[in-house]
Length: 400
Image 1 (cartoon, rainbow, N blue to C red):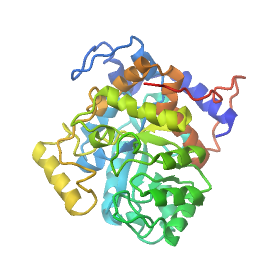
Image 2 (cartoon, rainbow, N blue to C red):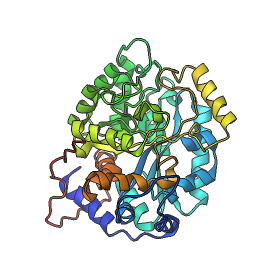
Image 3 (spheres, rainbow, N blue to C red):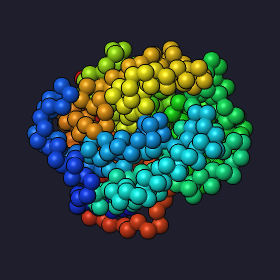
Image 4 (cartoon, rainbow, N blue to C red):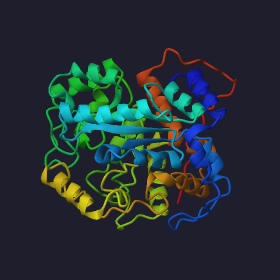
């Protein structure tokens, strides 16, 4: 993003008037302990409220089709969420049904809005709405037709993940037995996304395919949701080499809350979660770490236990999930952020660890906005320069 444009977006965020559905978030400010987590700082709610808060991986809604679950992100103070509307083995018909359901929610609920640009997300913040942008966790909906990338971009899909754990005609997945890298068609997919101004996502993708995609792309590449293998050795986590390459490419990587990717414990502590963020910030720099918390239908508390088990069994039997990377449920997300209705506890924990409000603003939303603006563009964005260079601070190194 050009320096002046980034400043313009940041200035708009700083003067946002919070109203509408985010009032339900503000009403939680006096609660001192939720689900056993006790906040440790006094100003975390203010910092959270004034931040652009983006959850960059939300597959839950496509699992449950429950409108009430959208409210969890509103209650947690989210500004925008990346809604999974396709991927894994979903073909065009089931993908269209998910997109139609999301479109219905946006059309019938005035507190929601579709976001196609970084400026749209700033508008959502100012108007007190929850922004939604659409995300494919795998390219299965396009079949072998790269022209459909343009179609889905016009529908509202802004992020294209090139694989989902297993091999497809484009790339190898993270849990495949052999890593063959991108196919010729896969390189074509990356370039089609660049042309259509769709962000290339290499989450769930094998190491060689990730590096191939970064090399092939003329735009920043992201990992919307993927933790560091160097911290926790799970096959779904991402190598230090790839994370460094993502940062060098100008992209970002989102920290995940899925238990087995954070810790060896059944339920990670908040310290475990912050420890993963520390590791990735030290490795990549503060300008390249985001959040893609990845609450889904198997998260404890989302559905009855028998339905969660049935969904897990289906994912394993289809080959989409490798039990070595995805142990059997229940899945207890980190203490304090068990569900997205308490996202503000992550802000508290970051403040307590020593991150500044500027750091937190980057991790929650600023780094996403930079990539969005670079790839999606926004010809209507106003350029505002206050004379300060807010985007030139050196990464903060946290040793814990």
